[in-house]
Structure formats: C-alpha cells, structure tokens
Image 1 (spheres, rainbow, N blue to C red):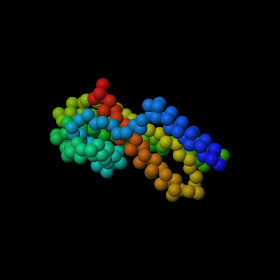
Image 2: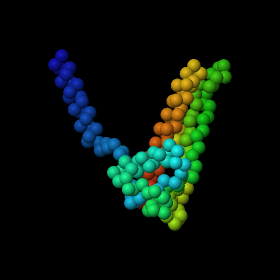
Image 3: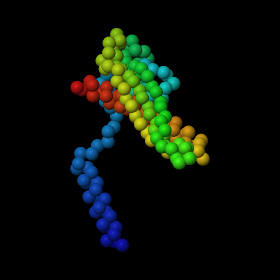
Image 4: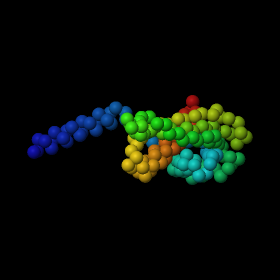
Length: 167
C-alpha cells in the first residue's frame, strides 16, 4: 500500500516538473495596447457584450470608451453570421450531425475613421450531433455552442489587435 502511494507521488512530481520545465503557460488575456477602445456594433450582440466584458476585465474600466470620438481606437463589427450545415444523415434521411459556423467581420479604426486594420474575418466551426428525441436539449446545446464561439471570437479579435500593435 505504501509503495503504491509513493509511486503515484513520484509520478505526479515527475509530471509536474516536466510540465513546468517545458515552458507551458496559460494563454491569459490579451494586453490591449490602447488607452481606450470603443466597440461599434449591435449592442445586444453576444460578441459586442463579450468584447466589452474582456476590455473591462483588463483592470481598467475607463478603457472602454462611451463613443468612437472619445476612443483612441474603435473596433467596428461589420457583420456576424450564424450558419447551420447538415453533415450527416441516417439511413432514414434524418439529420444525425450538424456543423455550426460563426462568421464575424471586423476592422479597427482611428477616431477620424482611418482604417488601422483592414476588414478581417474570423470563421469558427463546431460539430454537433443531433437526435430528434432530444429536440429541446439540442436547441439549448446549439445556442451554447454559438455563445462559446462568440466568446472565442472576441478573444481572437483582441489578441490580433494586440499583435498588430506589437508588429
């Protein structure tokens, strides 16, 4: 019994030291290089809400400007599109699997309207199995996957803006 415990302890220590020694680090939040940003888009959009939340979470609530004229830079959301494509059918012709797509097109502008970052598109995909017997649950799962893609897109937009400034 004692040797089994020692074995697992040594194994856990070895794995943790290998992980720490390899340079692994959690991605964390993007370091926003501007004093203030404005998010120009549909105020009810999950993407706009996520962008605003991430900007505020950076520790400076004043980074989120009330208008594009007050901001050092503006993120303009040009379009957001959700698509649902059938991936597979059963022998009886019923849908078994969908692919959910989320496309967002955005650009970065100065207060004068000059483009800093030309229109850029992010496309995200998620596969989802489907069963008619669980129609309500699958509808909820679909909405959750779209919300997750909006959060992912918001993080990608801010990371790309941070990389643009660093380049």
